[in-house]
Length: 205
Image 1 (cartoon, helix red, strand yellow):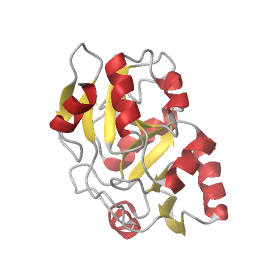
Image 2 (cartoon, rainbow, N blue to C red):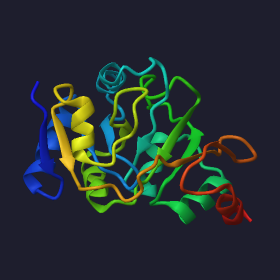
Image 3 (cartoon, rainbow, N blue to C red):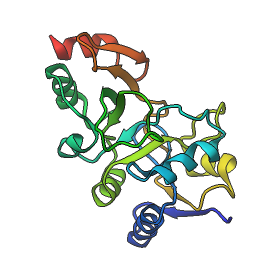
């Protein structure tokens, strides 16, 4: 397989990405944190390929990216008041919120009763998500290797393994999102990131 790099702001590149995704393929693209590797969230076979390509542990949960809060009901079974506060304060942005999983989410995305969801703060990626719907997305790198903040960084690790990388330049964040579990009564930070515990607590106050 030859891996292509196309500019994400090229309409033809976006059309190519949509064709690949809707036919069960994967595409790497920039977000506001790092480059991600994604497939349609409701396509179990396509999502399963992500772990295979990356050499990722089978059964490990994959976060879902959405374009707006209106898509949240498609992937989550319920939204608590704490979740709503955090979503309205930090989305779009580098915060992944763990919520009760919608029954439509396949096991390839998560085998847990929960699912991680985020809206990235990067206009070209939001445009892609509006056209495709929710995407299951994890960092575009081989398992155990560093996340990539450039398209060529992705190519260095995944060349020949994926068909397309959408190039949006250097990602502004450079580090993975903060992950907070809102599926229980009290929010718990699962992974530290750009948004601090103090910021989260202030948003909930």
